[in-house]
Image (cartoon, rainbow, N blue to C red; front, side):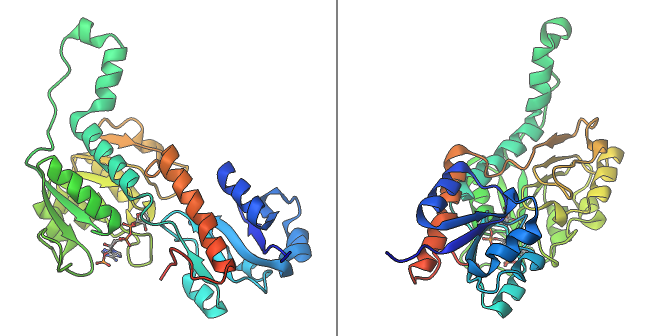
Length: 315
Ligand code: A2R
């Protein structure tokens, strides 16, 4: 029988992933090793594949110990922690898990928008505290219907957010590095100009040097005191200190945030603010979607070691 390829599991993965990897490969769990240097010295030269996620990646100090590495299979669509240029130079293939999480991400985005707009967390707390009976009706709220939604990043997820927003009778506009000729939505070449024209701004771009703090004071002020900001992409895309200050000063209407600069640490200054909805990076976190993402991590490795191209290679 052909020997099974050796896979290094850098960080804990979902049980379904670890079980499927163990069935198909010889698995080495780096995260269980007390002495990681000794562990890598022992198994490093056998390793041909890595399983990880986009936040942990496979840092150079680990890759340097894997001279026969062929493939990194990453969980999640974002792969910010993986240096793809370095991988290309080393001849290492990289895959991620796009598409299978798009619907769940779009659902989370709409959920955050509705929660922020209709103040659902506050209304829930008001009801549970017995304030309805004691104090009367909850204050009136805003409404999504008829509002303009600016999408920063009309990619796979951005397009599904756009579809759902249209079902909510919102006007959709977008900004990206270039106009997409097959999309019907008005395009803004300038993010600031789009923010000025939008009631809502959803950020769903990858984390990269180009998108680092792309949401800055200028964009926040263009969105203005009635404007609502939603981030479901990456915390690094926002100047978080500037956003917190603008929320405190009422220079922006509100924010719903699923991602943060230094996860799982969330700026405590946000906690007392009534104009924010906070979520612990839940974008794709459903049973169905996380299972599909894990399954794709394994299938990408299996494809590669069967001599086929990865199913979802990072281009
Ligand atoms: O710029 P374009 O036309 O290539 O549009 C992409 C946009 N994008 C940017 N927009 C403005 N300035 C940038 N510097 C910039 N870099 C990228 O982000 C594209 O419309 C969108 C990304 O779409 P996809 O590659 O299809 O990614 P997907 O599956 O929608 O996921 C987006 C991100 C992930 O990378 C994770 O960070 C997060 O959602 O879960």
